[in-house]
Length: 408
Image (cartoon, rainbow, N blue to C red; front, side, top):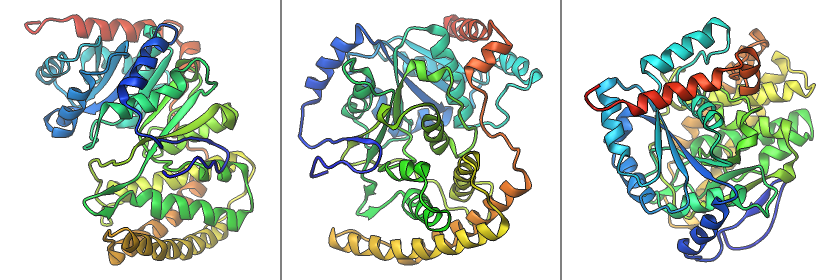
């Protein structure tokens, strides 16, 4: 970033000066007395074996203001859960691990399923949903940050910048989205955001006309970032998507429930890199292929709730418009890359756009065939209305799992 300019509906908080992280952390320590802070880390067990998470843990050992760290652990047996306890036990902050595959939380999941309230799809969305349930049950945090466990360029300043806007009691922000430049190894990354989301939003405006939600979405510098923070009050009525539409779905929920003036975005890092998903053109159920379909459907559903009508002819036009806009974007990205001494594979970029264009159309067809699909998991307010002691059940299950000794 090189300026203080604001654009769009969402406030930008810029990282323009080289402010020492210790200075920000000192303020956050003061805020923590009024607004205790928690960090949520949704993790697969396999990520414990990767250097990215090791770097994250080492950085978090130096964070002085967090009151709690909540780890959502997926795909772990009992021995692996014990290993995770040892792994995260190095952290100086209180740590709670949700053993999502353990018998206690599985029993809770089956009980919710019997009432039609359990997540139906495994993955990050389900993991985050249960972590937020535990945060509400524990009732210890007022501000919560979340980020992924595969960030290769992590440093603790990223977390400080991410949580500061919702932890500072002088601010009115309820939600903060992190953004950053997606450049690594001398090339541009972030294909889904660059080549799908941005041109699709523009295409939808061209086909369907001006729309506040499209303007709102277009205000985010990196709508698909997995780094965001929010005040705990937001969690109770937040419906979280269970598929790859998680990030877009969360932004759509915030748009429904809050004024844009309650939402901000912050530049959390000048350099960012993480594990990259394969394109998977041969399998629409995996990688960026599935991600592009889920994200497209999430956008279409949101617009439909606002009264916009879609037909098969509309989706054909949207696909054609998107394809032309995306190809124009590739030309711009190529020029930008050359200007900055980066490389950009135009063939690979156009292959991705061709795949995304097909998936925009297939996502539209799936939406038309099943318009009543509900990919969102229920809000915790609804779950608690149906099962008044559900939060206590989750809290007890997590506490008992974490209290067991290695020999249990």
